[in-house]
Amino acid sequence: MRLRLTRRILVLGCALALAWIVSACGSKPLLDDVTVIPDLITPNADGQTDLATISFRLNRSADVTIRFHDWNENVFTFRDGIPLGVDEDPYTVLFPGVVAGFTLPGEDYPVQIERRVLPDGVYTWEIIARGRDGETASATGALTIQDADTELPVITGFSVYPKTFSPNQDGIDDRVTINAFLKKDVAALTVYMLDENGVRHHIPEDERATPLNQAGFHTFDYDGGIDAGAEPPPDGTYIVYAEARDVLGQEIVVTDTLTLVNAGRPMAYILNGDVEIKPTTLVISDTLCFTLTVENDSGTYLRTTGPWSGSTYRSDENFNALGWAQESGVFRVGLDFDTSLRNYPFRWSIGRPEVDLVQIGKHWYLPPFARSEVTGCVQIVEMPPRVNLYFWAGLMHEDVEIAPINNRVDPQLVEVWEP
Image (cartoon, rainbow, N blue to C red; front, top):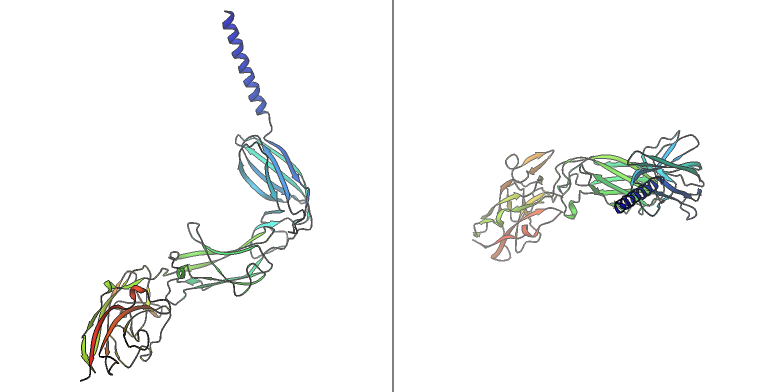
């Protein structure tokens, strides 16, 4: 009987001790050991007293807000509802005098201010912790701001041109120029386009105008990434952002819109690398003809121009003589031969207007994933340097490239004789 009683007393004693420990832990304040050192800072990036160290301890998990009140009862937020857990070590954060963006009475900036330094004055700092159970604790104190560099990294003259952009290497509105003027030197100037999934498409700067991040006129050039071999973003209207951040951490943003149409990386081939050339034996004044099929293997339109499929050249002519100069961005089929003095002197469109081709604006295009048969002839009116010579076809993307797969396609030996 005494043994059972002793065990009961021991168990009861342990339970009371445990309850005392839990009670003691629960009595600790939610927010503890709060300090802001020093109590005066000069946020001007001179390396002297630019920062204040905010330190505090949490004894339970909580959402922490740090904000400042000025003499007119305006509230400026530094951190808003940051979730933090219990930690043996104090939390510390450096305060550079910069808070969430705000405007002062009488100000009218044509930009969005994301972060801004507090102007000179005496502020009341406040740290608020809200526990998961609804408990709230706070601490306050004073902080003086002095000699602050309050000049904002303002961007003016922000423009996007053209507003409608077709990154498909057709030579028409393939690139966008974005201009921005910085009023002060910054730590970073970034321009990007944001898609509907929140993905940023970086737009590089043309460094010929003004050195990076220095005050002055800045120009950005965008091709949709297509010149680097990337697939451009899909068609649609996007927001273009320009962000400037100075050495203090002040940030401003300006925006504009940009619409993409007919976007896509162009890819086309001579189908199966097959070219029909005939006749392979002829005499002066005979006509040499070819037939092939072009396949648009991309999701964008391919621009082309004349001479139109089915046209006939004389061997002493070239596409310039027929009034069709080389044109940046167009696709054309060419015919070449061993002793030619220039690359692909005879050229034809990759289809026929209103048959294989569709008109967009003033220009003719082969639609996405379409095929077209291309034919052309050359009348041999003068004897070439050799009787036997090879003729071949090519598919050119003028002023862009002749892809290896589309160059010197299906060479065939042709004999030319004098009558």
